[in-house]
Amino acid sequence: MDVGVLTVALAEESIEDTFSYLSDLGVGAVELACGGFVGDPHLPREVYLDDEEAQAELQSLLDENDLYVSALATHNNPLHPVEDKAAEADEELRETIRLASQLDVDAVTTFSGLPGGGPDDSVPNWITAPWPDEHHEAHEYQWNEVAIPYWQELEAYADDYGVDIAIEMHPNMLVYEPHGMLELREATGDRMGANFDPSHLFWQDIDITDAIRLLGEADAIHHFHAKDTKVYDANAREKGVLDTTPYTEEANRSWLFRSIGYGHGEAFWKDVVSTLRMVGYDGALSIEHEDSLTSATEGLEKAIDVLDRAVFESNPGDAYWV
Image (cartoon, rainbow, N blue to C red; front, side):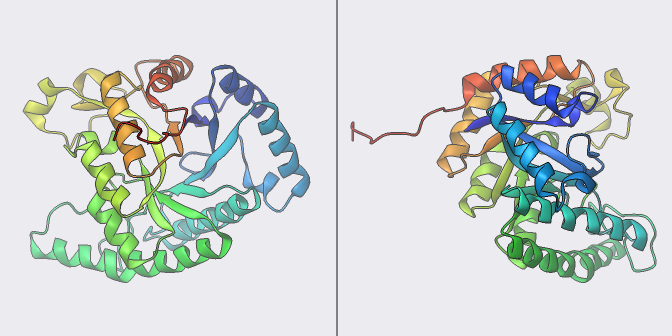
């Protein structure tokens, strides 16, 4: 199991400096962004897609720094009710899948997307309750008429290229918790799975290791984001956790994304690593830095320090004591 980094936190640095810096910190894997909300600072598709020379240069740079690519990332909304926006996200995703295949990368991380509440809407609609009845009807429309047909086609497309689609369960997207993830997987195919990011589940009061077991038993964890969250009870007791306060007004929010170790301690992350091994996941723990209380470099370095002590570097031997 390797400590990895989603490199968008270092977007202002060149790919050469980014790889060298992470290698010096002992990082084993990188997740590279290819468009959408995360941008494409280190892997623009127009440079690398279908260009064997550029791809060979990338591989040489990875080899030089003892790194490999755990996933390509493109986070956008291919289910957007505005056709042009949906088409742009769909193109990004399909091209990223093709590029992943050309680079021998196993997974593409993305969002499920979020449709409008009906065919005439122009704004995505995140529905969190079944009443009044029109909300239940809208939710059924989102799943049955938009999401499932789209992702059935994309799952087959990804399968043609031998690439897994790793959905980040994210509020304000149709799939935001593990049961929704399994529902989408069951309606599509095994190429669909989770980019398991605990940070979005903490504040929903979802037990992380239970969720890992649930998805792991279905072999539905394709990638893992290492990101922490802290719930600030003094605020949450007054206004709950569905908080629209800007992320930069830290003192007034019910929860914040935090660097690894600043929401949950080292013992928790060791339990996460152990549970991942129990369910057969032995891929990268890709650190995503989104902590507004510290710099990207300090946040990444502190996260690497915690995870370095948590990950297993060897395979288990025979249980000689049984």
